[in-house]
Amino acid sequence: MTKQSKDVGFFIGWGETPRIDRRFLLLSSLVLVAAAGVGGALVASEQTPPGDGVWNPDDERDWPGMFVRAPYPMLRTVALDGTPRTAYLVSSNKQGVQHRLGSAEEGPVVVRGSLIARGKNAMIAVADGDRWLRGATAADMQKVGDRLSGWREQELGAATYAGEILDSKCWFGAMQPGQGKPHKSCAALCIRGGLPAVFCPEGLCGSGETAPLLTDEEGNAHGPGVLPFVADAILATGRLIRVGDVTQFRVALGDIRRR
Image (cartoon, rainbow, N blue to C red; front, side, top):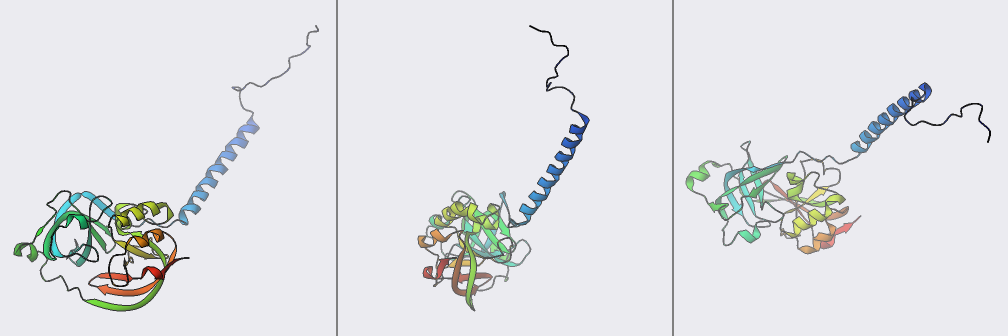
């Protein structure tokens, strides 16, 4: 066996990195970080804004007003800013309050619950238990005074919209974002449970300004036939009807189709 005349170099993983390699790795890292930041910003800019909906379930209060049962249970009351406002009534979970109404009659009542709001869209998640609804006294109604207008219908004309069907609770502020394909199963479950369905015209789902209540052609709540269309891109043709401060988009089931 012959003895090697000189040492043969070999790799040492913990040895000092050559200067030229350190410079390359540093520059590469900076480029990758910058590219990731720019890429993330571009992706974020293409997303639908989640909106400014808010809900504090712990902030329960009494809301006096006028109660109506159809097409969904609603309370005509006075908003925190003092303006008349219609608020849909829902349970704290994924259900409406229809099964909790019993023989409650339309008229002056006091509802206890927490406010869900997005822009001028309002909803009250009623308190758990049986004491969330009671008849209003004269003193209760003095708090709203004569600011509650009637429920007169105003025909706004025919309309055809591209957009999607959403459940109002999540879109108003219970979940963000409350629209799009990722929210489809949740929205369908909520609407099946009796939560009001709303229609979001294309391009306005990130805005709190427009979300008309979706009903059938007679102004009643849609049945389960509408569920397969929830959160899909659709085209709907119907009529816009103004009832108080609520705009209804009255559409027959046969006039809803996927795009």
